[in-house]
Image 1 (cartoon, one colour):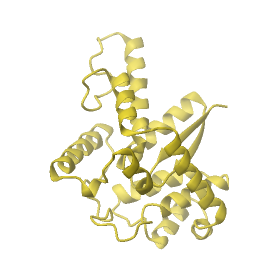
Image 2 (cartoon, one colour):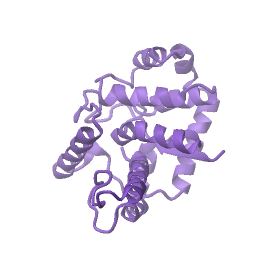
Image 3 (cartoon, helix red, strand yellow):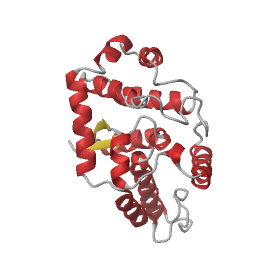
Length: 228
């Protein structure tokens, strides 16, 4: 079975948006999904990225406009300024701990994808503090998992080793901003400033081309999982 690695941060709105799209791709193509949460704060300074809350106001405003377009198109609830997405990061591990819980679930052969999406939804749509151990435990238990056991395993040697390995492999893979932009342009065509609606520009009645373009858009959403 083909393995599909997914590198992402548990504070990413794009990872939240991609959830149903990714689930559909895995189902239709019968691939094995491996979730690989990584240390966003460590990678970003080396790849030219700028954390969301430290971007200039104009860029933050554009980011909100893009989120608004996607939440309306995908019909997924999302708070543009979630209550528990910190303006200033006092706890450097605030968005790492949810990722550690997801890894703990995955290493135990549990439904890590369901837990991951629930944690992302909690942060971006339900205004819940996923940096809180009590909240993470509750979310895990709401999804049929032993939240206390998973929370206790977050700092275990095996989980921490996997998290470091995912961060190294994310860095070694060369998934930098420019590379993602080139891939995005290859999927959407030169001059594309943002993702277009699936099927945009297709001739009516050309079902084959329409489906092909839809598939490219689904992949494009998944490729956005690196963004915070």
